[in-house]
Image 1 (cartoon, rainbow, N blue to C red):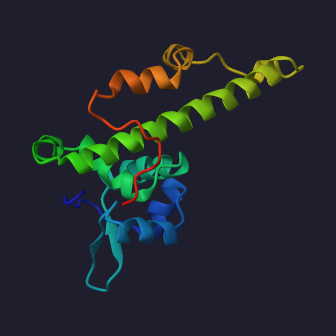
Image 2: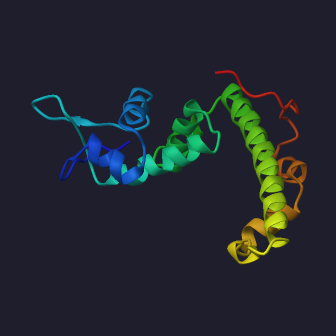
Amino acid sequence: MSMSRGVGVKIGELSRRTGVAPRLLRYYEQQGLIEAARSDNGYRSYGEEDVARVERVALLVRSGVPTRLVRAILDLEGARAPELAAVCTRDVAEKLAAELRELDARISCLTRSRETIRGFLAGTEHRELVGAAPAAARSSAAQPVADRSAAAQSPNEPTSTSPANS
């Protein structure tokens, strides 16, 4: 989470720059996803680094990742990852593995949808609107989700695909 505050960006400016409504920014703050400094008059003030963080949070949320998992992902991407790994309990690892399987299922569904849309548009007179898929996306899409998740799953992990409840 951002602690250093340079030139303050007010909530309206952060909203304008990220396309995230002020009300949603306040929700992200309540969930611990972003942190605002407060001026003497109580106005929220964000740092420049918060612009990228809000964009990342919004993309994860739009991708269907629950905010409780967004916070965990941001923590794992940050400097706290080594300290968190050292104290990761079996229960937490199982919940993360379940979320990983759920993400793989969503990615598979989205990949199929993308290919359906791409195929449809390629058959129209507007085919120039369809760009070529990035190489990484094509190679990932070629491997079934079950293969990717099985390769990452340890033999001791449960095989249930139900989402974690936390």
